[in-house]
Length: 359
Image (tube, rainbow, N blue to C red; front, side):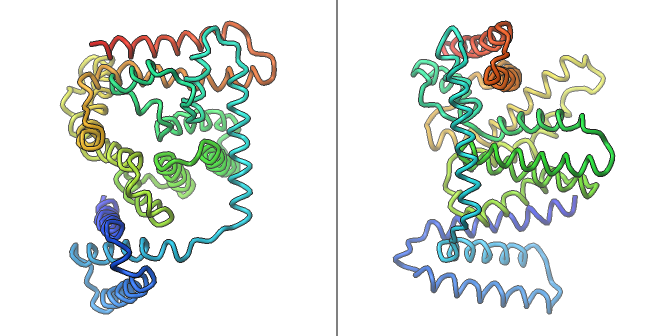
């Protein structure tokens, strides 16, 4: 727990430093000069800490803030283009386009089903009718349409389960971890590598590496480490709404959910206990993301608990069903029963949200 607290102490001022420099006008502070001066301050302060052996909360806060300012100021000066990375990104994007083409060819009775599945699997929401988009927005389920950590998390669980069939010996576990990271990375790139997807990908990488090292990091520690890593490589993400909402939601789960979860008695009915666990997660996320949503969009979903209790389980069923349907359809061996079942799940999701939105 001490490691988690230390990482949080560093992550928050680091993000604050990046945000503060992002808010400054570059016409006032020349980028080269700001980067150079901040580097001198970071090195000087780091040497001071090493010589004085003093690493209290104030020292960590100052060092984190200065490092964040340096990273943001220096980011545009060190941007390099690597042909290998560009080639990998282009290949991944072609995979994403191929996946979209496969989804378009599935013979659902209602073309809206193709559009919604395409949004859930690839993030392309261009073909979703306005009335469905409005139902998702009004009911408080917009995060389901926006490709995020929720979607990558489900994909990650599916991949993990499939790779677990390879065996449990040390060599198999190592190969499974590597393949899991590689597959999630390709999927993230194929779907556009949005800020919230990158956050989830870093979570996956940290989790899998920790398993290889036989460690169980705290969620708070993973969150803080991910924040530092993502802002180091993509400091401009600090102003991305999806980035802010994604980290705010996980912060709610990490800090608020443990307390809400304990409200319900452990010896109660297991079904009711599970329902409360799901509801408490939704409440925790809304407490941290609600103010941001109100600030940016001026809205707050009144029935978010009901929405998430219905929409999240259905989404957890739709994504694996849609993946299986898409894969089998691409091979020309998908049974009609699976196509109909997948479409029924999509209809159930849309109908439920339209009812909630009408309330």
